[in-house]
Image 1 (cartoon, helix red, strand yellow):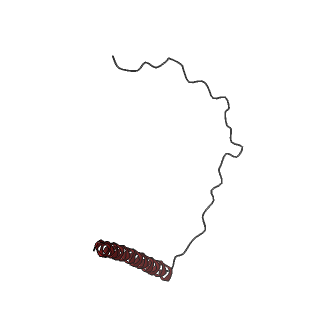
Image 2: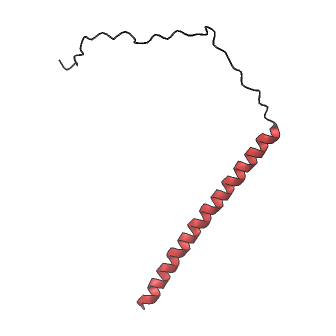
Image 3: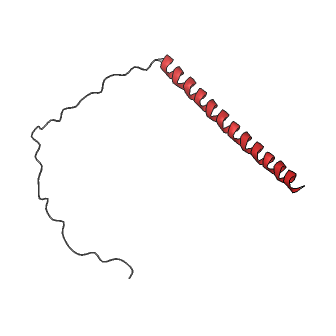
Length: 81
């Protein structure tokens, strides 16, 4: 009852048939890469240092924001008196 009714159009034949000129495709191999343990350690240490710097910036920003709110509250109380 609620099923959609699709038209009975057959799929048209492809207008262009592709015939490959070279029957065997050329497989290219990637050059070998060697990763030394020193490079991995350098990347890991760099990631840890950058993460620590980002955390330090975030903590500093939060502490400055808290100090600004406290100073604003103190100045507002001072002006009311």
